[in-house]
Length: 323
Image 1: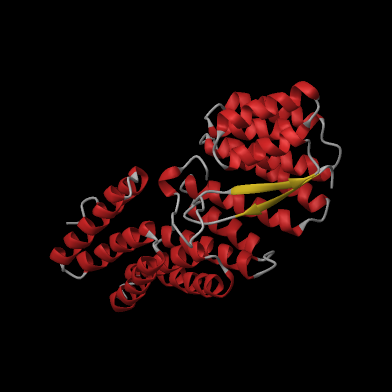
Image 2: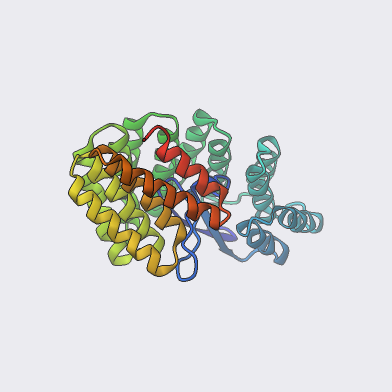
């Protein structure tokens, strides 16, 4: 498998380090997770390359770049450091620099696994830059390498990544097809929960509300059973959203009130506020504009008190023109 192994963790609302506005926060007992795609690296890398990855995960990009440069100065062929360097450049919006680092890392790739990883992170860089066609092409390369080395886990990663790009590009049927292909390769409840949630989102974007609700219920059950508290909270809010889209307002309200209560108890300001936003949508849809306004105001107070501009932006996005 080469000198390194990468473990990928996913969330839909579509979790990415660059997209702070979708970062979900449950403080205290709830783990901080990003709505975009991120990974932890576990491999026999140089000390500086390993430290670079840790700094990257903490979003300390200047330190990460310094550590990557130090590792590369010691060994210009340190592909782990080159990969970390490229990821940092991508997070900073420096696509050309990121691609140069990945190309150098690819030259050091000794087997199919290494090549698969390089293609995958290259796809992520293109995706974050909004270059959808290039991202899909890179993910396809990663997918073919995964098939060659018979890694169903990374086949699923590639399909999921393709689905995310298609979703961003507004190609919802293609996103659904990719997510369904990935779902067939899910190996455990966590992966099934993620896949079901992605499928639900694609159906929702296609205005197929009954199908969206069906898969979100499945996702909720998986996350309730095996997921993190963040995944459970997010799945609950989206379930409330999809009940409302299917005009089952009573179920939507019950679901949202339950997760708002849970978030309050856990000190999860983000989910409490976000729950208020979606509940406000339900109230507005049923003609209760007064309560909808109160809920929006409550959400805004939480964002203000927590000094969370990203949350404030999300509240504005979710409730714009609602009342």
